[in-house]
Length: 101
Image (cartoon, rainbow, N blue to C red):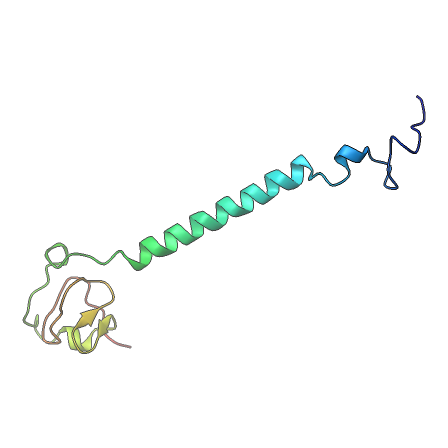
């Protein structure tokens, strides 16, 4: 094997055209990290926007026995819910009712 002259290599022992190049392994790992980050961001946004329709959770504007939205852990005063879209009455009820701890 012939030794390269100083004009063919730089001080790193690499050809000048590849001295600053990114390796294929580094490129693939970087692309995978970017892809994974995009998936996490998209799923977080989807979860934040996944409120249920009132009809889908049998929402009613009156309590079911002693259970009512005002006593639910998901209720957000004065008239919202973490899991149900639209205006929610504190006197209402739905199938997602979860008593406050």
